[in-house]
Image (cartoon, rainbow, N blue to C red):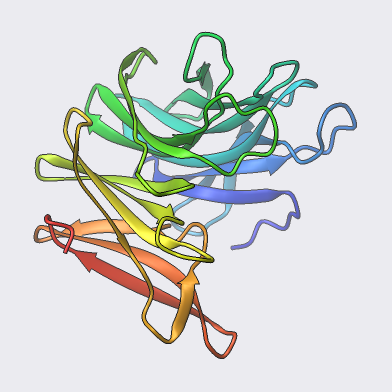
Amino acid sequence: KTLVSTSIYVNKIIEKNVNEYICICGEYSTSSSGANNGADAKLITVSASNGNIVSQTSCFGYQAFNWLDDVESAIEIKNNFMFSTGRIYLQNLPAKMRSNLIKYDSNGNLKWAKYLHKNSAGTSRMYSRDLIYYSPSKLLLAYMCDDNCTGGCTDYFPGLMLIDTSGTVIWDKTYNIPASNAEFVDRAIIMGNSIYLTGFTNANSSSGCDALVLKTDLSGNVQACKSYGPTTNEKPFFNHVANASDTKNGLLYFTTSSEASNGFYNISVLKVDSTLS
């Protein structure tokens, strides 16, 4: 089934029940007030048997001066609630980008939406990239942020934030990787007693990026960090190299993309053990 639209993208599909799925989407605004490249969260419920749309809900309506830019991640329904995250732009601030955390009931109705930022002065940007369950009552947010940047920023730091299901921050950790001008994260995953962040960095490449894995304990303290360059017949990896990750039998798998010497693009899978080898 295809929903014909030039302004909606699907971020994640969640099983609502045996009969229905919920598509967590971003819908770009067409309002003339504010920025036209902003996006609102949109939840589309579809039938599991035939794919037909059952209902549609815009749960974070467009506002003239505060708008969503990306809906990056969402997690499955537990205890009759689900959550999504992304980034939002707030006008009339030195650094406009904030992470958001949105809570919905199991039917996709908005319960609350909260802004997340790095300091009380609000001078750091924060960009949510992934959201997973840490426990039934706690959420783990993977993000990247900058420090006191008011213009176009390329120097981001990866971070982890533990939040309870009421939106209260339990702890927050930011990581600065030596000799790297930019570190981006795409996915977080828990394997054993460790948290793994997958993403990319320009620390070891003259152009393009290397794949990156940052390993922490369950309190967010760094245990190991390693970057991975492409094979000799490829150019460095591109941004968003780790868009998919999973674990099996004590191994971490994540995807990368790179440009081959013939100008085409390759998709690769990296398989990493708990020592990051």
